[in-house]
Structure formats: structure tokens, C-alpha cells
Image 1 (tube, one colour):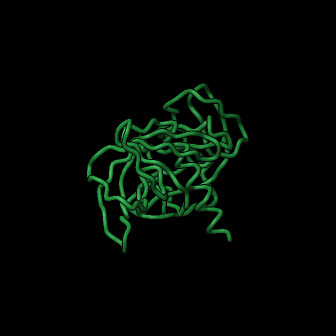
Image 2: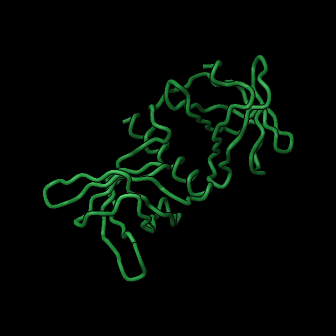
Length: 194
């Protein structure tokens, strides 16, 4: 796993507080730890538990570890004791049954039900066929955090009298994407521990 931690490798770093989520880049690899530079100024403390993940050729690498030292936006992090390759997708996908409304225009709304979600997009069921590569505005509430984003269907299939559409999020803020990443990771880990 250490060969996946090298200079300029980008990770997402999360603490227990979603407000502390950020991208980071490895600046130095030492014998017992590695240093990362945060993309956004956040507050991390020594001995704090953090989660890191990144995409690799083997799938999505995920591990928890401890902050060794903090100097402004450079954090030294102990090498993890254990790690997991969660999946080959760029973002973890989890099942989520929730009703939402798709807005195409101010006057045109389409009810939908989410099948699964990731930080990159979602899969939904509708009674009306969606237009591929068209933007639909959606609002999702994830752990009491409203996320407003455009959904762009890239694949649609018919199932009885319904349509199943998979698509990606467009114009999603970094904060909303990190919120979704953290939510999906936590749910995936909870499900794997059952």
C-alpha cells in the first residue's frame, strides 16, 4: 500500500467534522509518516483521527490514521496500520431509497425515487423518460445538509412502466461533493460491518 503514497498524489482527507473535509496533496514521504498540503485551510490537531481516500489502479484506497504533527496547512500523518480497497469506481455508491423532485424548468417538475447515490451521481426511477445529457436541478438532504445540484442523465433503460436513469452531477461544489463522499463512505463501512 505504501507504493500508493508518493509525492504529488492527491487524497481526500476527512476528520470527524464535515467542515474539515478537504483535498490534499502528498509533499513528502518519510520512513514512518508522510506529509500532505491541504488545498483549503482547515483546523486539524495532533493525535486527531483522520480518514483518507484516493483512486488507484487497484480501486479506491481507504484508510484511517492519526495526525502526527500540524504546521499551518502542512500535516504529517502516520502511515496506517490497515487499509482497504473499497471498489473500482471513483466514488463509493450506496443504496438510498428517497423521493426527490427533478426540475427541468420553473414550471416542469418530475417526481423521482433514488435507487443509489455516490459523490459522482445517482440512479433514479421515474414514470417519465428523461432526456439524456439534459440538466435537471435536484435538491437532496443528506444528514440535514441540503445539497442543490444539477443531474445529467447519461443512461436510461425501461422497466415495466418506469424508467431507470443513471447520471452524473454537474456544477457540484467541492463542499457538497466531499459531504457526499463522506456520507457514502460512512454508510459503506457501516454496511460492511453488519
